[in-house]
Length: 163
Image 1 (cartoon, rainbow, N blue to C red):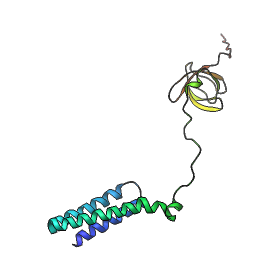
Image 2 (image 1 turned 180 degrees about the vertical axis):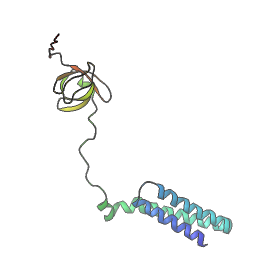
Image 3 (image 1 turned 90 degrees about the vertical axis):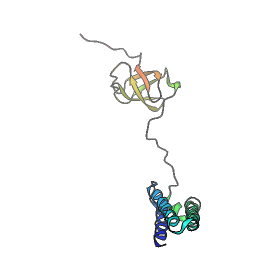
């Protein structure tokens, strides 16, 4: 009987710690501990004792899940530990859309052949069809792919070659 109670206590403790230490490992080990207690009860006390242990394990698991997912999120502790504001910034440049095709912009970085281009006040990852495009040079969008735009030097630029 002591082994069954220890396995149940360890299972309950690990399920409770799962709230504080996310990741799922403690919850899985806690569930396995409860299952181990039920299996030991079936082995030592037969079907009657095993059924009682199974019912107790299911009841404890249901109560733990109710506390974790229903009552705890509404508590002052959860509100103090939870984020209440969102971040408005972005970690990636915006995805280009088809309306950019044919527009002009400025190379924010040197395109060799990939870099950053600014069109209509927004920055995009761009790929140059014509090799190196220096920083600050005007460019024209020729095509739009999923995560980048394809550009060429603007036709308004005249280049001179020296021999």
